Image 1 (cartoon, helix red, strand yellow):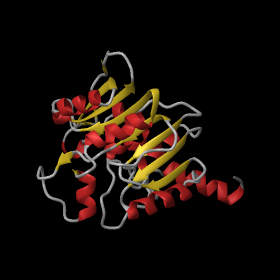
Image 2 (cartoon, helix red, strand yellow):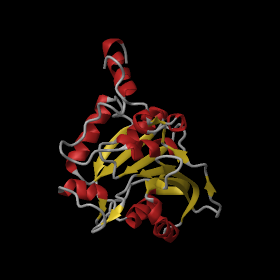
Image 3 (tube, rainbow, N blue to C red):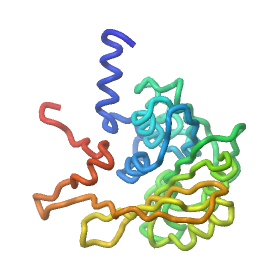
Length: 253
């Protein structure tokens, strides 16, 4: 990279996650994806999968953290596949991030990988507020892509001692843990995410290891916001954990 093209790419990367292409009128990514990308442990030279990758936000955030990775995104929605591919081009990561159409309920990789990440649908069909269209329903509600299907796909794709990290709802932890146990994935790290210090947890981040001994480490709670009313702001703790959250437009942008 050099000259104007190099500066353009660097500026796009610095602007992330702003500027990401997303299917018009479809499901929009939210901060849970950014938190997941900051939670999972990755190292240079590793290979990974982003199951249900949507517009590619988690995988691309991981590459911005550690450019020495190689990732494949798996996505059912053709419009999201196109968006993720375009985002990889815009951020100059096409040699590190590829996107393939697939349904985690039956898709399997050709080779095993070091890690898998997923931000799966949180709710079962019939639970919560209905979505306005089919794409948003598939992103928010389980169909064939149940959490059990994500866990099974991850377990099949992982090397022994490989890691599967995901974000989900705390209220579903009992069944999630049962699904993980059923495919040989052992929870090793967990972190609850709270909107404010005096509020119940709204998300849980979990990292599991394939064929590992029992032993779960629960990390200190992550508090997203501090202050009250018009003075509410992203907490310093949250920004330190996930610098991508510092993405409000700056003056002059």
